[in-house]
Length: 185
Image (cartoon, rainbow, N blue to C red; front, side, top):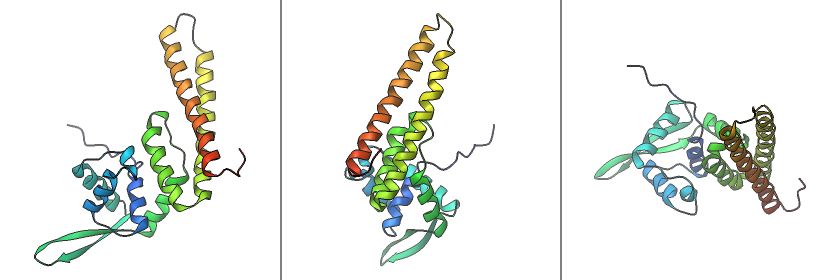
């Protein structure tokens, strides 16, 4: 049996965004995630998965916990953002999503928390994601140019990916116009 490989922290950085607002306990965060006015429209987590992600963030040094007594009820862990957690969140917020397939959830989570921070963070995120999309389109164009005649399936797959990335790119322009109407492209 091979050991479990630990994947890099990515989307779970979004959980740090809740702690930027104030310290809270895991169940409270779970309730916020379930609320449609936050990330509930794009990201659904089972409570057990949330707890596992929070433990991972704590192991990485991004979250500190303290115990809060509740009278006769069991004490609960209150989580707060550490300085390294704040720095990791700030870096995550302005970094483009690395893969088109991760865009729907990860970018929308970044956009949610970036918009809570300030317009500069939002515009930096959007600009960097537009650059990433432009690079993806160039790469896909090269792949299309390199196809051999008769590679119909590959042609269709690449055209599909191009159309997705082009739609995302157009939507990012709309985001920029909507969120900062006075800014130019």
